[in-house]
Amino acid sequence: PGAVPPASAGSAKSTPAGVAYRSALDALASPNGAVAYLPEELPAAQQPEWDEAELAAVVAELSTLPPLVFAGECDLLTERLAAAATGRAFVLQGGDCAETFADATADSIRKRMRTILQMAVVLTYAASTPVVKIGRMAGQFAKPRSSGSETRDGVTLPAYRGDAVNDFAFTPEARRNDPQRLIKAYHHSSATLNLIRAFTTGGEADLRQVHTWNKGFARNAANARYEATARDIERAISFMEACGAYSNEVLGRVEFYASHEALLLPYERALTRTDSRTGKLYDVSAHFLWIGERTRQLDGAHVDLLSRVRNPIGVKLGPTTSKDEVLGLIDKLDPQRRAGRLTFVTRMGAGKIRDNLPRVVEAVAESGAQVVWTCDPMHGNTITSPSGYKTRRFDDVIDEVRGFFEVHNSLGTIPGGLHVELTGGDVTEVLGGHQEIEDADLSTAYESLCDPRLNHQQSLEMAFLVAEMLQE
Ligand code: PEP
Ligand code: MN
Image (cartoon, rainbow, N blue to C red; front, side, top):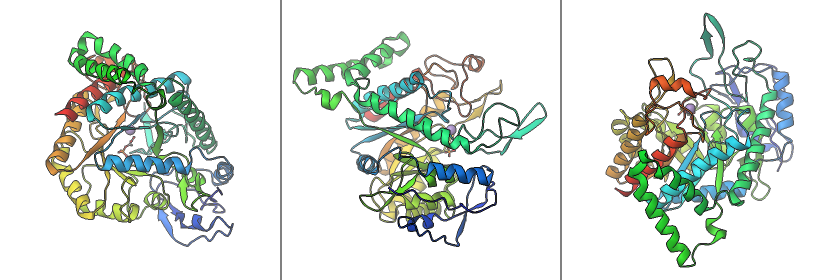
């Protein structure tokens, strides 16, 4: 596949938040090398200011690096998501709010993957459908920020925008936007994905193995409520074995996809390539890309870029989303109404979802699109605790999921999956759960540099609770 030249190459100006990027249309002319830059410039929200010369060199290098995923894999994921759109599969998308370079270790990657696989087994059993497993992993290194700066003790510095942009340390040097970090993000994504690919086939993902971990969770006295489900799963596995239906080929391995927010346009453009089989454009930085609540402007550069690639894509929808916005997004991103192409990730808040989701769902029904509906029960439920931590209440998270099921069940539409911020470790970032984490406990192991994540135990607890909702 040929690399797509950066649309901003040759431009000397910096690219602060809100400044225009040329339309990705220019990329379409790239296969024969004749790049026709169109005059159209689109506003691009949430872009860091870069040194233009350094950025151009980095983008040129990124454009020569191999794809992280293949177009055929993206197409397969679209097929899997098409099944979720019609209730024949359930999506589980999860991982850090923001991955860090320091945490791209074997241990951390393995724990996150294990957590997702353990949740998936429970959900597969409860939903009686395949679970489409997608990590917020191998590329989730950049963050949109509500404020461009951060003040501590009277000192104001640029905000931390994720390891792909700058460093979390609170010094002017650390907070400088460094384009070289885009290259590092690529290599950490590559190493992460390599390990994920090894785990998916190397025995780590075997159903019996994953179930054994879940038994450990359900044996804990605090989790007595979930023991019955764990026992039912055990019986189902034994039954398959007894029938000779347990095949290592099928149950000893999994499909696991990579996803991240398509935020940094120079990075995503440099990894947007022409598929040699079909001549179509794919963003080969991940299988699935999504557009955040802050960058989904209909006439903005993010919607434009993803409208031109063939990957399955998602858009976050907050509580104020209007019917017109939804219809506009569908017309831009899924004009052909291809099932599996578009996922709407609703993140409305536990107190708002029951009132605000129905009008959005009804607008989609009117459009004829077959979108996948997933529930992000994290981003609408963020609070600041009395002691000052950015946190969420486990009960609010669960209540939003419950509201999501209620709305879809009452409208006759399909609740297609979950989008969750979680990690595999024993962190204390979200309040509640069976460990009863309280405000005073948050400081014990609050490790996230951005949003609070469910820890391993809370993630499993969520899976068992959602399993109950799926079976109601
Ligand atoms: C996120 O998913 O981390 C995020 C920033 O979400 P949203 O765009 O929905 O606010
Ligand atoms: Mn987040």
